[in-house]
Image (tube, rainbow, N blue to C red; front, side, top):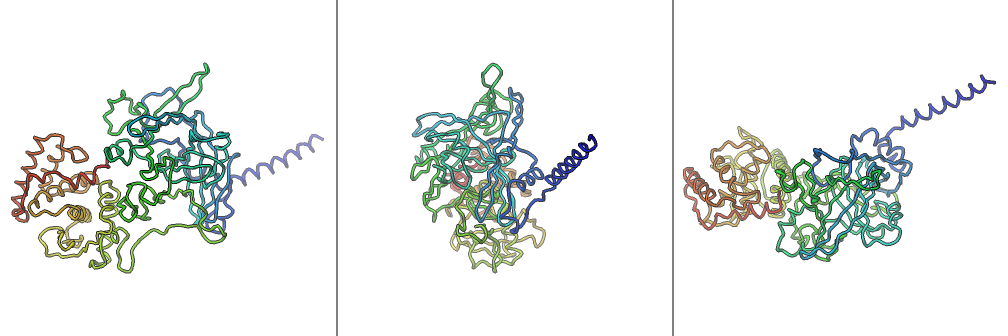
Length: 533
């Protein structure tokens, strides 16, 4: 009898182990054939094979605090509560995240400089794993924050929320990487997408002071907390910003790190006043009508950087093909055409330009590198539809020339001899900045000094080599201004500016350029750098 029972138990055990092994060996689904069948088991397998971190949302750099009353925050996926959704373009698996702490969201709503009210709300977090119809798989974390205007059972609405729409959730959804880095945010009303939120740092908002279009906003911060045995609560506010907590361990206001504790703000739409997302026809980010919008665009997908899908996070858009069948509404990244012009090149230069395919490739690569720099990206955005004619002429005296009268740019060398690619990038930056300057023959040398200073700072940021001795003076001049080209030391500024004039006058190419003391304002640089940190 005992042998019989042991035999039955052994058969059951071997069957259980076999099933467990099979569960461990679930292959990740790929391609369109398996797209419609992508489910929770596939999502779990993909997560466990590819995820290396799972951290709560943060708006600041990830820096270990010197001390904390809380243990490390742990986020654990609750796979038994996973939710499936999707349409013909994407399949989603949303997994609630359990934690050893709870997250508190604190918001202060401000209008016309006055605090209207402050609210607090406990957040919910989910892991989202998305399989696109193209076969690509993405993972990210969403943090759900219910609105103070929400009605009914808030807890139930949080449970019933669907990223692609559904349920009755009213509030905000913040998307972040698995490492916790903030990416973008949306507003929802009664389960429906209200639109993208404009999220920025308070220092960026300050750049629009006095304009009136951004006088309605809310500051936000996050805090991790836990209940103690005595029934009290401990909070660690290092996960957010504007909390007065310094993650570097310094007393408030004494941290030498730029931007530490800089408040994060959600700005109301300057047109309709909605602060929970909207779809106004004007550009939501710069406030201009779309035809005049000069926002920086992603080099890959050509969307505005705030709408860029290159993170591959599926935005909660409607089903691209509600009738069924077909693929998802993927955006094909822009690229070269029969003229060999890349996407960024097409935005700035016209079809009358005459470059070889290899030269266009070098121009596009240089523009792509510039576009990753804040000031460089702003410049590219401002030059959209400028229709500059660019040509190659190895016989010109300078590395590059821009003629404002003909809107024509000439490049001497495309690395076909001794000049490096990074020299081409530097030359393009220099001449493109000239194309944005207001031409003034009586202050031509001022324009050169401004362009050289901008190139110096760009080269320092991008680690581009600077061989010319003239940049030694640019270094001295740069030290007399802040990051936004505001003068911080007038005496030294005037001294080094005069030294720059004297140095340029010794160069044959610049010796006849006129200089005007009234044009030493760096206005073009200030305009491009005003929202850059």
